[in-house]
Amino acid sequence: MENQSKQQIIILEDKALKEIIQKIDSTNYLIKEDKKKRLLSELWIDAVDTCAALKISRRTLSDYTQRGVLGHTKISGKPYYSVQEILKKLDENYVSPKSK
Image (cartoon, rainbow, N blue to C red; front, side, top):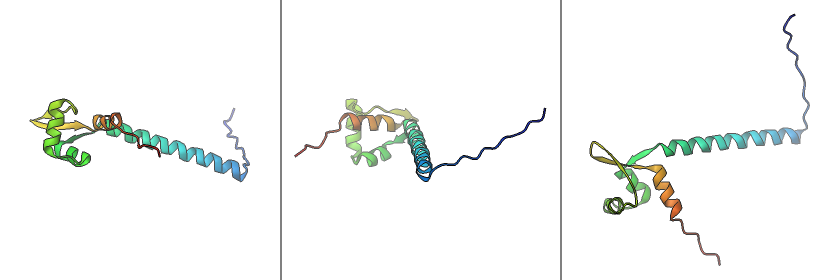
């Protein structure tokens, strides 16, 4: 028996094709967002970048560290902060705007 490939022609209405393309685009977006989240969860930044990201002084960061607000790890005496933990703390302390 020979392997014969069968080809089919599928006819789609313009609306159906657009819906399929939109679903593919949505799926691609979700995949990209998931990859970003996973990359951020593995990212550690130093004190300078942490201060810049949070728009705080080195003294404030030191205070947060001493009070246990932000954890850190040290490599060769230099502190590094988890981006995931920073984002989690920001979410936990989010204050919704008051509705009028």
